[in-house]
Length: 63
Ligand code: SF4
Image (tube, rainbow, N blue to C red; front, side, top):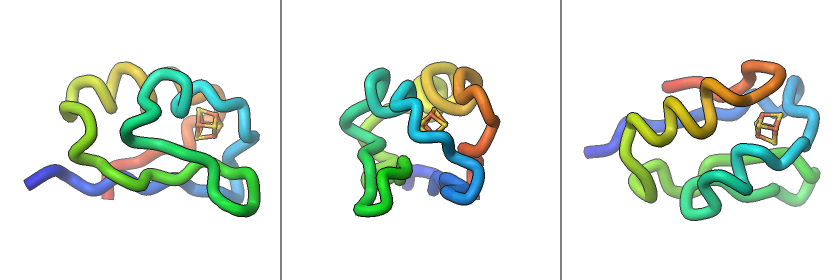
């Protein structure tokens, strides 16, 4: 089972990088902040490298 991913939307600056890199995992919510809607949409390594590591404000976390 995929690990769960949590975006701290109080910190997210809506840059869209995680969504551009992994649109099968992240999307914008109704507040215009990123949210993870399907952590199984990519491997843990992809989520680590293409989202967690590149988020400019480091607000994507494993639960
Ligand atoms: S990369 Fe970080 S700051 Fe940018 S949209 Fe995703 S969660 Fe928000």
